[in-house]
Image 1 (tube, rainbow over the protein chains, first blue to last red):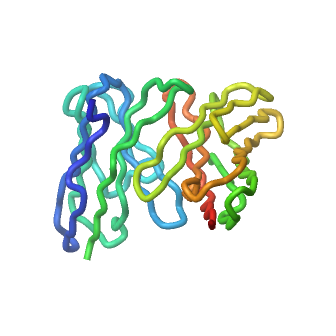
Image 2 (cartoon, helix red, strand yellow):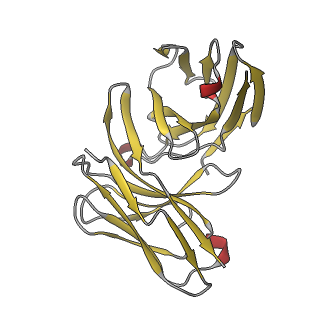
Image 3 (cartoon, chains in turn brown, blue):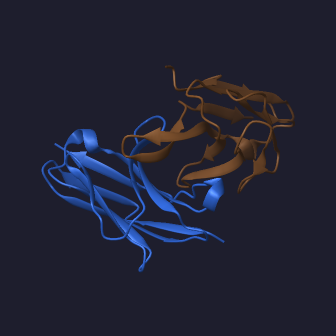
Length: 114
Length: 112
């Protein structure tokens, strides 16, 4: 199992450009999440999808859209990137681990908006 | 608004020391509290706590939850340089929707 995968690993955008961050999981999990992590800020929830066909806003949804394409894939789109969106983006899916239910995280996408 | 406060924000110790990391929270629809370790990549899961007073243990790491006083602690005994990381606390505040609210983390540095 690959777990949670994300592409790209790193991206540089100019202000106003658009892009889509891709996320896929092969663990047959229903729920998936997008977070951003900024220095000294912990992880903040952008959007989540409790199941295929549903999406909901998290703490910081402005400037983003999401698509739950199928059970495996959950993408995050920046329609018009801004420097404030420079961050590390993590995708996660929710499932059971030996020590309890958790979210499994992908390796992250580092985004720089100039 | 849900609130999670971790302390200290950073900590420097020597190998072999014991450390205690703190997490206090105020969240609605509390169901559980999770601890993660983050090195230079994605967070990795350590523990999930649901009941007060029951210690969870994994090797040199242990954690306990107090639902009355709304806090949790993570203990690491006989620290090693490989324990250097950011430790994140995250109560599950979404009820049946299962949403995690993360604290800012504690940066632990273990020197040889």
